Image (tube, rainbow, N blue to C red; front, side):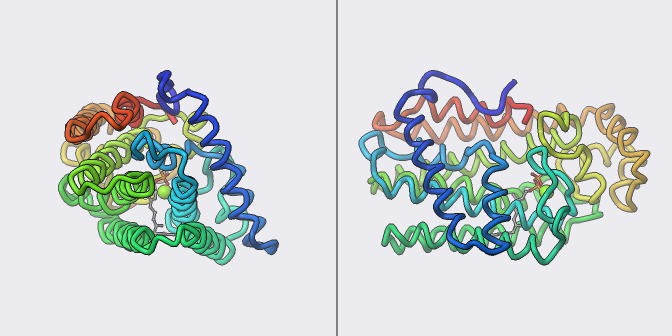
Length: 324
Ligand code: FPP
Ligand code: MG
């Protein structure tokens, strides 16, 4: 397993060049301010990341539109929103580790982490505004609202092991599916696609991909290795967040249900995660992730051959077949 699929269509010189230009734009965007937020923003960027959402922007462009500078701006904007949302998410989740490094929240506390997320969020819209494309900015604004609603829903569902798979998927559609879908739609539009059916297919592909990604992420929170994920194991269990593997396991195991509802002592986390595995919930959740991969593949069948369909298909499998 790996961080991202390494098929030849994803390793060509054009994509390498796009990634280099993207990093330069991101660096420029976070270097806007030189105070605390600017420094923390640069550190957040330097911590790295898979750059999966910018990849989706690039691959969702028609082949002929890939050189458009606005595509890079759209890619940088979605990555900045992603970075901002993770900095804020680590405040809400009280998460100590991200990408193998202490989080902004763990090092600097609530106020600095909130301000850093706000800064990155503002920079995202500034970069996108350079395109002069008002519908693109409106799209990203709608998406940011969806992220916030998803995170609010997660708070409402916290410590409720009776949360249903449908309620879980509704929250994941908002907190993760929306940004994946937006990355794809921005890529399509900024790369010159205008056919509504094409844009809708890429939206649906991205949303399904986001769901597959989030379910896989939630499985990794139960059985991943912190060395690979760069995150602490069992954060969702400790926070009482009913992810798909946890809520499915809670249906079969009263100890898991009680840990989700009432909390778990640090010394008991690994034991409860072991019980989650013993219920078969991890396999059931992985099967659900693959259902969304297949839905993403089905959406690709609605696209013409002016897109890199093999690469889009490889990414769909890569988001679930990963260890980090
Ligand atoms: C990670 O989830 C977090 C998200 C997918 C979205 C976070 C959104 C917000 C905090 C609200 C909106 C913020 C902005 C700036 C628009 P996770 O906790 O399941 O993943 P993790 O294990 O990587 O932390
Ligand atoms: Mg989190």
